[in-house]
Structures are given as C-alpha cells and as structure tokens.
Length: 356
Image 1: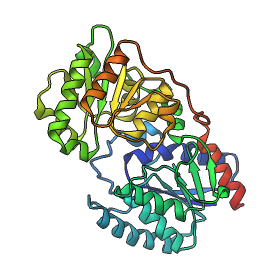
Image 2: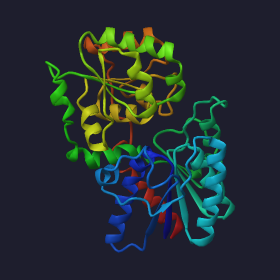
Image 3: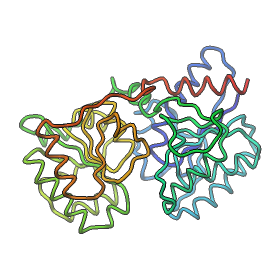
C-alpha cells in the first residue's frame, strides 16, 4: 500500500508524525507499506524551525510543492496544479490530508479527480460560520473524503456513518511519544519566577492581532489579573510585531521555541491563554487550565470535558477567568475518550483492513 501524506503548515507535521511512526513499525513487522510526505511550502519556510523534524524524530518531506503565498485563492490554484503533476507521475492507494487549510482542500480536490481514496485527518470539525474560509474548506474536504478520521463525535458532517471513524486525537499521540524528551527552556533560568509559577500566552490569529486597541485591552486585563505571576509569550513574526510595541511590562515576549521546549513550557504552566486549538487540546490532556481567545472551538470536548474556557476577545471575561484559575477555582476536567496515544494505530489499521 502506497500512502501520500499531505501537509500544509507546521502544525500538520506534529499531527502526522505518529502516522509515520506507525507505518515504520508496520514496515519493520513485514507489512508491505510505503509513504511519501509532501509539504505545500518550501524547504526554507521560515515558519518551520530548523529543529522541528529532529524534535519529532521524523525525516523531512521528500516532496516540496514550493507554494509561497498568503492569498488562499492563489494557494489553492498552485497546490492543485502541482498536486496534479505529482499524482500523474506517482501511484498511490490513498492520500491523507490534515486539518482545514486551503492547501488541504486543493489536495483533496485533485486526489478525487484522480479517483484515489481520500482520508481526512481531524475531520468533522465545524464553526458553523460560512464566512470563514476554513469552514468552506472543511465542508469540501469532508464531502469528498472516503475516510473521516475524527477526534471525537463529529459535529457537522452529513457523511455516511460508514465513512466516519472516531479514532481519537492524533495530536496527543505525538505528545505522549515525545513527553520523555521534553526539555526545560533555558529562558526560565533568566526569568526565574519566585514560586516557579508562570502563565503561557500564544497568539497567532491575524484578525485578533489586527484589532490593536482590543488586543491592548485584553493584554492589560491579563497583566492585572496575573497579579505578579509572569506571563511568558513565545511569539512568532506578526504576533511579536503586534505585542512588543504595546510595551506591557508584565508580558514577557520571549523567543519562539522548538517542539520539545514548548511542550515542557506548557505542561508546567499555571495557566495557558491562547487562540490555538492545538494548544488547548494539549492543555486538556495535561490538565492545565486554558483560556481560548475565541468564541468557538473545533473540539468542543476541550470545553465540555477538558480544561478549556472560551473567552472570545472580551477583556473582562479573560480577566475574570484568569483570576479564578490563579485563585484555585479552575474547572474540573477529564480526558476525552480515545485521547490515549493510539490514534495513529487505529487509522493505519482501518486503511489496511479496507484497502488490502
């Protein structure tokens, strides 16, 4: 069985790494399997730190589509064109696409035009806001897919139940696999919180960053509620450019980190404030209280069962939630079903059973 694994952004590599571990293990056990890891971007992509593949213990992609654009329409067209060439040259039994990017949708469309089986990893997620480009991507990808691999109960797909497989959250496979290798960041030696407590802040969503006045209000509210507990913000690119000029001394903007250091930092935090669904999912697994700067989450399990609180972009809600957490009034939580580190095994076994 020949598998093409399509990635379009840094978080995708974290999610497909367990699949690669599972394929390598099956190959070592005598199964006739091969995979090709494809990345929509280039080998010099600035959003991917040089240590990422070593941290994840996987080889870099063997194919780079070299699509370098921020315009989603342009990304879609270029990825479709280059996927067309790739699938015409190669012979694959199944293509696995991840999440809900424009490049993911483009790869899905071309895959089905070639009559190849399509598997969607982290399927069934919805915001129910059709004005969001990613919501359109999700609808298209799920509608085309032959295998919908979900992290929980799908909230928005009309696909046949025969296509839906609740395999669990593959992000936690990676977390469990790498947890023994997490490293305490050296930056903590310089900051040295008196009681060892700190808060982690991550921001990436462009809409949130562009609303500078509200961003300042939220950050000031966080700083006030933190009451002296340091807020560490390992930010990248646009986020650094947006936060540093605001000069809020309680928020310490630090260099972005590799996977193993960031994993340690968030695992040991007193609280996490983020706009990242992935970070919120890991917080639930680690039982670390988490405040999400959004009005919705694709993984409602993090709210219903986990540690996640949806605060939107309201400074008062963010401030109140953080004050409660630091006062010892964090919500009770449990780990959702199948978030057990065996998601990749279930995915690969499903494909083997169906395609062989």
